Image (tube, rainbow, N blue to C red; front, side):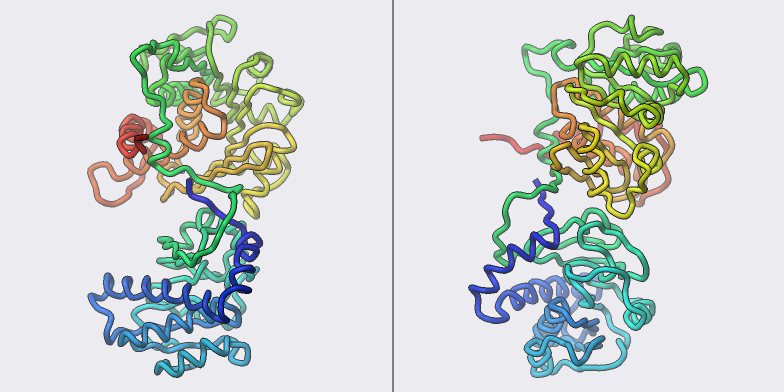
Length: 479
C-alpha cells in the first residue's frame, strides 16, 4: 500500500522527533534529500552539476529553511545558487547563515537558472500565492522542484483557489500527503525522502500495481464459470445501446466467469459479445453474484422498477449513470441496505446526489456521502477517490486523463461489477478496477506511439485484457 497523511498528522509525527533531535537536524535531513534530487535533476536535464545555476524561492516557514539548506549543499557541489527572500525579516536564520557561509547569493531576482526550488510555503500554508510570489512564479521558464508540495496548492485537498506553482518534481519529506495524489498534475513526479518519520496507520491509501495484480482473481484447478463470479448487467437501451455494449464488454474483459445481461439492448450486446447470456428482462436474468445497474437505461418507470428490484436483493449492487440520477430523486432506495452498495458518480452526478460540488475537498466530500448514505462511493476523476462508510479511503492517481472520454465510465462499471461478483469488497474491487481502467486508457492512448494521443471508449475497452495481464505480471508472489 501507498499511504497518505494529512498535514495535521505529519506535524503530529514530527513533534516528538523535533523534541528529541538537535535543533535543525530534521531540517538538514530533509534538505540533504532535496539537494540530492535537485542535483540528479540538473544532471539529467543539463548533463552536469558543477557550474549550473539554481534559484531558490524562499518563504518565511520551514520550507524556506529547507530550500536554503539545500542551496548551501548544492553550493558545496559547485552549483551557482541565488536566493530570493520573499520575507527577508522572517527567513529561517540558521539556514540563511549556512547559505551565506557556503557562498550562496541573496538577490532580488531569479536570474536565468537551470532549475528553481519552490520553498515559498509548506504544509501549513493555505490559499493562493501572494501577489509578489505569484509575480515571480509567473516569470519562471526553468523546471521547478517543489519543496514538499507546490506552493499555493492545499496539502490536504489539492485544491487551487488562485495563483499556484506547477512543479516538474515534488520532493516529499517523510510521508506522502493527499496533495501528491489529488493534485498530481501540479506536483509532477513525486520523490519521497525518508527523514526517519515514524508514521502510524493511514486512513488514505492507494493500492500498488503489484498488489492489484496479486489480488486479481485467477481461476484455480477446481474453478468453473460459476465459481469465478457471475455478474448481472442492466445497461443500455434502444436510445443508448452503446452503454450496454461497453458495460457488458468491461465485465467480459475483466475475465468474469459469466456475464448475464438483462435489458433492451440485448441484440446489440450479443452482436459484440456472443459469450454473454442475454435476456430482455431483469426477472429472467437467472442467478448472479452481483449487479451493475444504470448506464444508459433511462429514468422512466420501467428503469426505476429495475433499480428497485436490484437494490431489493441481498446481492452487491453497483449503481452508475442513470441509476444515480434516480437515486438522487429517491435516496430511500438505498437507505438501510445491508448488502454491499457502490455508487460511482462523476462530479456532476455527485452534485446531483448531494447538492455539493465535490471539487473543493474530494476526499472529505466523498467520505461524507459514504457515511451519510451508508454506502461505498467511487468519485471519478484523474485521481479516483473511493470511500467506505467507516471513513477509510482508497485513491488511484491515473497518471493522465486518457480515460476522460464518453463511455469510459460504462467500461469501468463493468470491470468493477465483475470484480464485486467474485466476492471482493466493494471498495477493493473499485480500487482495483480503477487501476486497470486507467492503465487500459493509457495503453490505448499510446497504442502505436510513444506519446499520449486522444482515445475513446472502444480502444480503451480493447486494452482492458492487456492491462490485466500487465498487472498480473507485476503481482507480489507469496513465498
